[in-house]
Image (cartoon, rainbow, N blue to C red; front, side):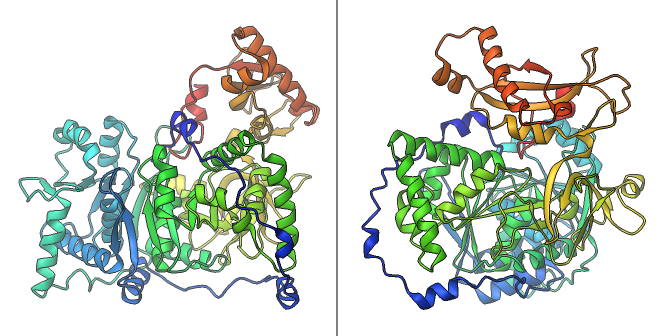
Length: 617
């Protein structure tokens, strides 16, 4: 799902009246419970030791056949349709059997492109359980780039959603090497190269009933190349990341050491599945624990879908978690309940400290807006304002952060639920080692990662693979940060974005962007080093760089705070004055010296990171 800013602005939550607060004096404190609550866990849980996806998928299907697995709406107006583990298991085996025996796709490359839906989960799992190499692709790619990815991957089959049908039709003649085009949500019989996924599933099931066990008997080599993911990266010519079954399974082993998920849990799928963050932690992880997944039908439906699906956990990117925070607080302000909410957060924190947790009762209206059962929010992909994370924790929702890259499939660090650390990107996973290369006086440097979740290498690019690996087997992440004594990771910037001043000082734009992002009058901002000639400065530029903020004004907030019908010059002056206030919090060499006002939107990746290379070229 593409996180569209215009749609995010339209998200609405119900009015928060705080009518659910009852007489707190009636609460009784249990001294024994209070004693126990003071003892906090410090060690990881006993974690799983899976080596393949097939291993934990088949186990979950055996243990929880009648439990909910995937929930999807056939139509926006209809209730969620529930697929049980038994349904999903039979459909995966049916599709896998048909793909290898009817379409002869064993060990071949298969593109999966489309919005999140049952057919996507089905296709990905069938590939991981023995068909061939899955190539998940961003559904937002224009047709020419989709064609390019199909050719680069040497794909022989494309599985696509009905919404991508028109794009597929346009590029079909240019990709004669593709043997089959499989449409999701279609039962069309095989005709030439075209076939519906439902037809293949049902045909495969018939073959299984007749005694064909060829697919289920496939043994998976844990270290074999099984997934190819093209990163959005910082150049238009993206790298292909090669992932194995072991990489994915080790992600599951890592998370189970820090976070407990139960068959009664339900994850809410909002983010695009072609990213390893969602496909691994939002799909494979809950499957491994017998939990269920409910598909969000689009950002404009996020509130109603959450209220119907009643999820217990959701994976988000910072933009989404901050939007929910702002929208709910807007509703609280409209009800003039800010002081009461703050007071209740303080009171309930004190009570929780002595063994009485009444947060769900006190903040019932807020929980109800999010479905009523939410207990975990996991944020990743970029840093989150510490204030936002603390607010969720004060509500009683566990706020966790994850850190990793496509190259680590993706988890390298995650917050343990028993020791949350708002502000950190997470704690190094139990199987990994993260160290800082050439740290500066603050202990910051490039993060180097050694982990069993680490990719096999870059697809058809041995030189690029060697370039990101150290001699002793550590991956050069490109992220700048530090690791504390308790193995918690803190990210301060990207090495590719670093601005080097004339006197050798390093400035990480992300640090300044985080501060500017708190200014109400600023909707979005990108900081970069500009040469005196007005072009983006290189690290080798021998002239002093001008630290420049390119800003999209938040016109709604400006109107609220400063009045209507302001001129461009007045808006510029308002934002510049705000920047000068932020500069006071920065050391002098980091201060923003120039402001550029941008109209429209920044071009972004599907996880809402600004494409700097596009913005500055």
